[in-house]
Length: 231
Image (cartoon, rainbow, N blue to C red; front, top):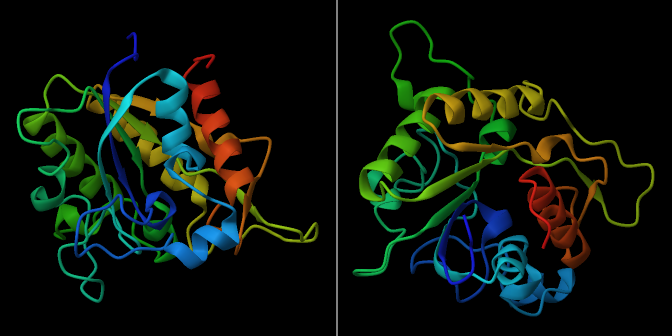
């Protein structure tokens, strides 16, 4: 696809939020204070903003919610789960529909130990593969012509701390297992898998998770590289 002039929409969690660019009522991580701490001055400093800028596209919608998971968790904010149609139906703007949907989700599922597969007799939306599949099906239902990028979360580091050990088993399951689950579901649904999880350059982050400006560039570079796009 020639991405020049194309509409891009984003599905994400806190890593993809930005003050002024997410729906009203959604929780925000990159408010003015955290933007200043991270050195982020505008959308062009975010991972998604850099990709869109470098490909000559246009942001349509950023549907990112800080603290959100793909899967259902009873103790999490109602309405925040990315498998919900109430979120996936909000990637367009009137008659405008996204040409590309970039999904950067899974960090909070990993951190909260979401089961990769459903338990016997359990609902699909409480498992990672089940809820991710539902999310993709809903995107495809609303935006059948969109190219969907399913991006596996990258490994990050704590800015300024060379001794930081990334907590691969933060929620009890290795992050790589979530990346493999994204690959499996993306291929089943005919979407594009982007394996940013195998990044050789770690993403600089304020707290080991949320990228600063330099980390955002690293993440954007990794995603474009794994897509085979020079921009």
